[in-house]
Image 1 (cartoon, rainbow, N blue to C red):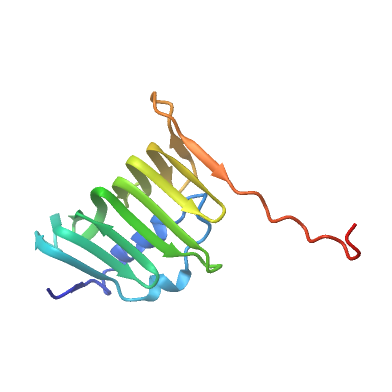
Image 2 (image 1 turned 90 degrees about the vertical axis):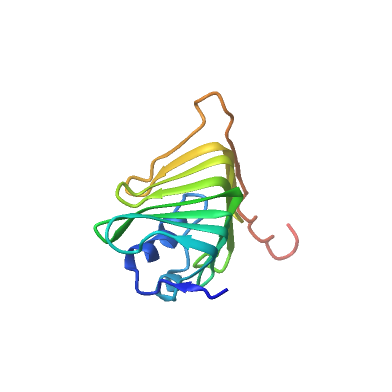
Length: 176
């Protein structure tokens, strides 16, 4: 199976940055955006030009620098030659990336939906976003990249946030 390379698709290259700007994650490794993006799938149907949807199936793997996304299925929605929405689904879809400070970040959800027009990322179905600084999990989280607003729970489901403590200050010399 030969990988499909999309290194020259600038809007698709925004996906890793957008998905990793969630508040509990910190900053994604900036150098990843300048790396070639490789999408590997069992099958591809659709267009990468004009308007329409390209469906990736049979196990999808997206890699760009330290970014690694895995899902059963992916959809790239095109409008006038530009990618306007990307959806990854699986049981679960997973994402891992190294942050700028070298720490790891991971996210899982049954569905990861990024609307590039509104800059809104929606994690649906048993999502969990984790980094060394903390985690957030529940059934549905909507994050607006433009405003920084996060919306989770409030629909009868529970949301769990865990914030790790800051590292304690070193003990003064002499043990007291």
